Image 1 (cartoon, one colour):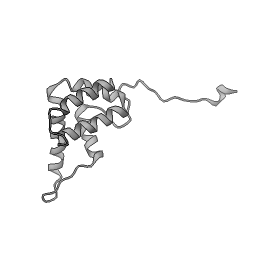
Image 2 (cartoon, helix red, strand yellow):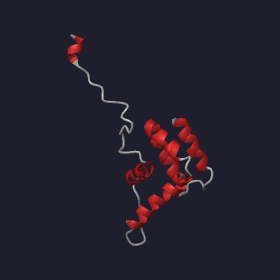
Image 3 (cartoon, rainbow, N blue to C red):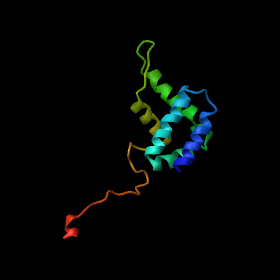
Image 4 (tube, rainbow, N blue to C red):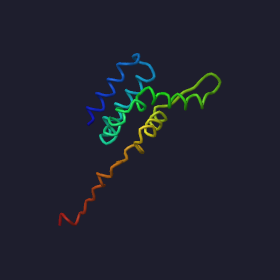
Length: 113
């Protein structure tokens, strides 16, 4: 599913100017997909909805930046952008397992005796 999400992100990326804000959103989402396969699955599904594309996600980040301007300067850190993207795509916290499919493994040393 990671490859599918990345393919869809690249398709949308080709529709915007290289190194533009939406293009960079796709880059950040691809990095996220590579780290978290469960998130990649959700992103791939959401990208089928025209209202959930990289342009719309970038608008959420821009709205945050506009709301936090200092004079004529605004900035969004990578972690802030990731938080906004996680909320936009409903991914949950970083490293979280939204499906609950991977419970923590417990090692009982008594099993070795």
